[in-house]
Image 1: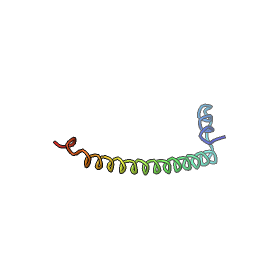
Image 2 (image 1 turned 120 degrees about the vertical axis):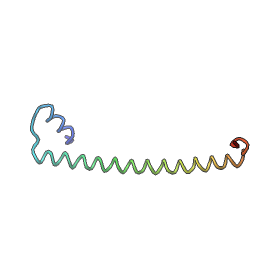
Image 3 (image 1 turned 60 degrees about the vertical axis):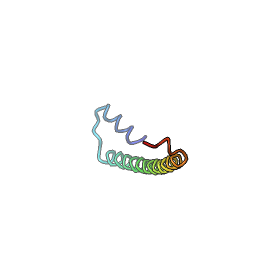
Length: 71
């Protein structure tokens, strides 16, 4: 059983969590947070790369049609 599921069950039952259960749940949540942070960093890097491509596309488009962007 996952520690977070155990925590929810114990909380619903009103049981007190012992130190080992608390420590296992904390370790599980720390690992889960680490994985989510890692995935977030990958997503941020993809967004940065897409922004670079977008800027290059806009610059290229401006060179081809300068009258469209003139003010």
